[in-house]
Length: 203
Image (cartoon, rainbow, N blue to C red; front, top):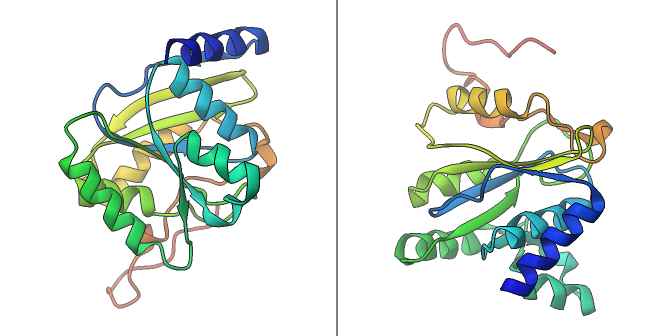
């Protein structure tokens, strides 16, 4: 643990990236964004190892092949079948509820390194089901900084909660700003059968 921590801090200094904030002291669902590059994985390791924290991170199962798969597992990676995520999510929720030690689960809410229309809502649902807060992790290439921001607890008012998320990530651009996805969930859209509802305006 001490060797990993020292190595992570050495790499951060050599790369001239500035760590911001602290890893949550208590169990949390860590949403990482913007997810625009494979370098996000390296940044996550540096953030966690530099703070001496153990963590789990959901990664699409297709990457768990050969040497890369071994490295992912050794560094906290958990294979996720995107076509049937329910089983692994239920298992992690149970673990989060019963573990006495700090439980940190990292998810890249954008679900892809490419620009998309919405974030995936898995981080929000897992936080609700487990009763854990959502900690906001970030990478910002423009300021050469990465780390952690505020922690929120989901209230069930998805739009209000996501307004807080959007406010934090408004000036965070990731490694590749052109791939950044605006923090927005499909669940924020009004239901078609509710009178007076209309789709949000573009922009």
